[in-house]
Figure 1 (cartoon, rainbow, N blue to C red):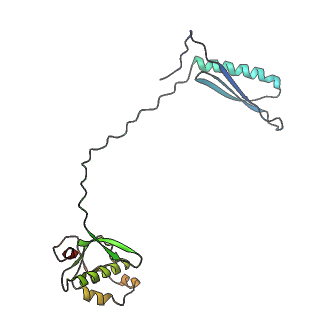
Figure 2 (cartoon, helix red, strand yellow):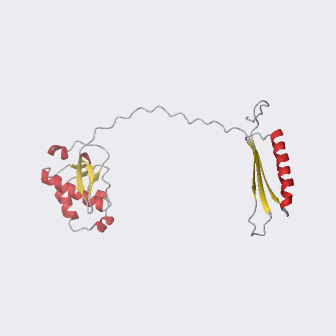
Length: 196
């Protein structure tokens, strides 16, 4: 609790009086007086009818300030809040970055981890992997696959024939399982790594 105590030996702070009167052109007769001494102040709104009334109003304001100084308000200090302690976190070691392949889309490309596109049967040469990448882009454009989960092509060329005449809108009639097998597990089949 902090209040201002006066030291009788020190020079008292000056009294500041601010009087705000309405414009003469208005019909208002309401005014404001602000009286301050040190850290304490009092503000009061009043009405008057003659300029001669202002000396009585100033005297009343000074008496009101004396009353505030005699019994100053107690303003509680704001509680000190300490930020919550941060939990000690173990530094995460980033996983080694896996190579990606750019899958061509209708608009741009998407970088997909190489291990997410696998060929489990049929041809496994470079041409088959290029075809699988193109087909993966069609699956993304058709909103059947997001490129984030692993997929496996049983036979890339059979899937290419199945997709040959489909538009992106036609893919809404199918599921991802109609074209490829989706799996969260990592299976050791032929992937693009064989070409690196």
